[in-house]
Length: 297
Image 1 (cartoon, rainbow, N blue to C red):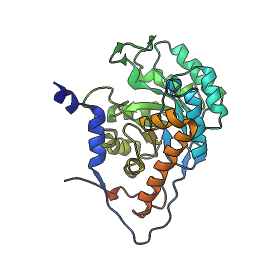
Image 2: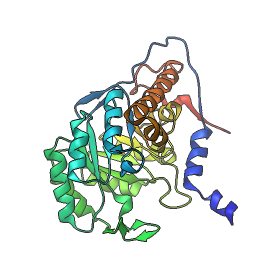
Image 3: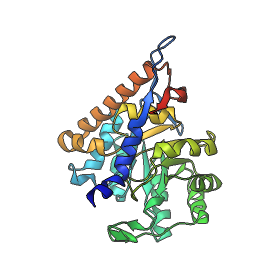
């Protein structure tokens, strides 16, 4: 039974897929690359962002704010998930450009209130992780006791129209959802299975090429799940992601060293990304040739 469970573990499947992608080196006419990211009118040092985490006070006192300080110091984008208004305001006060991701609460009034607050306090963008619409595997229909509900395309259109900020949908793995996101005129998509919302999930990087074809550069595509090092980020960028999110890899450094630990992780991943770009003749993150990525035969 344990072997069957392990075989369907989505995080392992995602890791195995990432590791199956090989990098073709190219050296002639190489230049020192730039890892600069331009996103929603702002410029960042790195395309390595923090995933939309929540409740990091369990990891480090004031963990979400500490993580934001680390992201600001590293020149990256901060994402945040569940949390109250005071926490979001404290995150923004660190100077970190922040994207607020809202759960699909059953009460749309709560969602609209959180969208308005995100805009009011200066978020870079706002969005929703639609993959939590039925709660979690261990708590049907709720997250931390709060009722969740699936959202229709018309409801998503309402959320998009409720703000001047780019509205991002997180948790897309299919062409079907991508088409609906484009119909709703969302401002970005996160290709993600939320660290294995269901066993045997399609790895985000395996889904990315088809989604990329549909989007055709109209909106940025982001990738999370299993992005643990700069080479993972390089592979995602080469396959069409605008930026990537790192999650669990920052947890232990945050626990041990707070903001400085997070900063070091992001800067270390960015340094490895830059090296991979240098040895593949990639002058910036927008010009990485996807043909440098090969799959194991």
